[in-house]
Amino acid sequence: MTDPSGAPISLHRPDQDEELARAELYGLLAQLWLASPAQALLERLQSASENNGEASAGFLTGAWRDLVRALRESTVVGAAQEHDALFGGIGKPEVFLYGSYYLSGFLNEKPLAALRTDLLALGLARDPQRLETEDHIAYGFEVMRYLIAGDDGAVCNLEQQRKFFRTHLQPWVETLCATVQAHPRAIVWQALAALTAQFMKVETQAFDMLEL
Image (tube, rainbow, N blue to C red; front, side, top):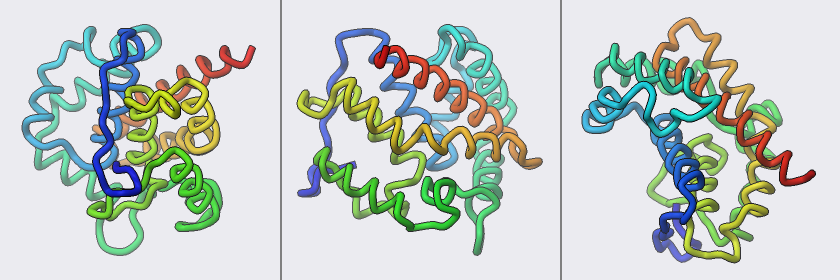
């Protein structure tokens, strides 16, 4: 993720432990939805405590435990094959990871244009070295991570988080997760989808409370 000039976006560590944990979880989810884990990341996750990982607290405990167990039973090659079978391959993938598809039924449609407008208002632009469009789930999670942990207080605040989440993630991410969970070839990403869906529920509840 970059600003419109192409410069990398800088992040800081939020003062509150809960906010830091949110930012870290968004970052981890973005990594795992974007690509299968490399050896170093896979080993780190395989050695993570089932009760003390990035998502160990509260409602996420069970889903985090299931993801760690699924990763322990996988390998770099196996995870890469699963990711490619679900989201890659030649032609139409088994599962799309783009918001426009779930919101409009097609890729590169009006939801993507609206997202780009909102990203520009936040001072963000797609990294030109990335092939994925901005409505890829990993990009949306990276934006949330930035809005939680970024240095620019004018945009990195709860109100911007709420607006972005409500508009560009909440309407479709749980549908994607349900699709992945129902796929017969999903193992690691079935567990990842379950964790993601549960996290979306937690975030939705938290933003609901802001509006009371």
